[in-house]
Length: 94
Image (cartoon, rainbow, N blue to C red):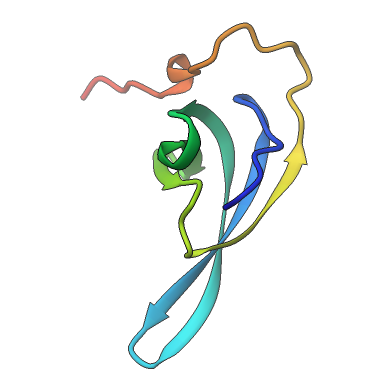
């Protein structure tokens, strides 16, 4: 099980194992932690990154065997006053 040493608002890099046919590779997903939910084995975290103008979110269970490692790239510069940072989600009117 992964040790959680990050909080919402931190920028992290998640190294995930990807299986493509008979090959395996490591893919890195870098973004801001929006939320950490659950406790114990049910704990999961949500990470959001921007790809151009589109926000991409991924949710990982902490106990996932696909996660190789999680690096904390930067801690939030300001004190985060919320446990869930859903206000960072970008809403665009079409």
